[in-house]
Image (cartoon, rainbow, N blue to C red; front, top):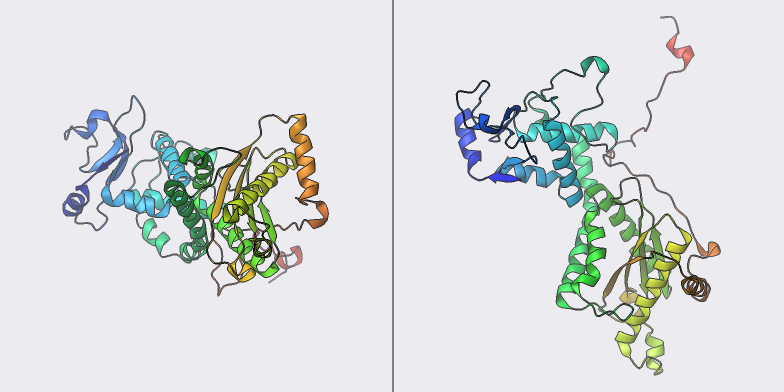
Length: 380
């Protein structure tokens, strides 16, 4: 990927246009960009600058900011670049009057299809060989639409997930992680779990952020020593084989007062890590289609224990092969700690719309309301 710094002002001046982004013309290939006398040459146009090799994306400094503002996670941005490379070499696009118009078309397709993002809707056979030109002004329409406003408001819930990633990154860099199963805490130890968390797209982060916020509220209301929630993968998860386990464990202030916690907070935290790992392993055993569990644990709220301050733990657990000893350990942990027992489980299912209705509007219908046959064929 290349970002042409300084091009924005030059494009604005040349075309006397506020857009300031390169015209995208896929028919221009290689040296066509340098030959002002070549057929179809247009100033400040970008096509395929490396037609014989890997596709090279060329943006100006404003266009890349626009793309990264609306596709601000690794997964969403990488998906856009991959599909953009395929599309610009598909001989389907004639020209796009700026990156923002191409981006708007991509986002509008996702809006219309319920999150299946691409640069075009599926074509009818009669239009297979036609060339497409995005409507100029589609970007302005998108950013002013009520659907975009509703999505932006709903995506605020996803910032909880962003903040959590930042918090764990700080913990790793500052060395406040505890050892897990005897391993010395390090960036590499938490790196795997952080990678899974960071791979989630914006919509998936919204779902996870909402689940995490709901878990925190529910755990405070329950006022129990231990509270846990399992979040199974959804259709928009970055990896359909990854599940998350959230857990809080109250600090045993009464036990400490009686002298039953000689190791203090460090002993409590090691016990919490062991408990969290047990949850993760039991889940892997119970749900064999899940290959990785990401465990996240924290202290119970101070209003429950009277102890302010706290810490968070993060781990990624995978089991390549189940041994007899591991199966025995799972059975013991499940009964000893009452982990995922059927009688204690509360299963909930929630549906989410990436482009929901605004708060003052009625919910969007998932299917159009059809008139009855009597109404359709009634004589006027």
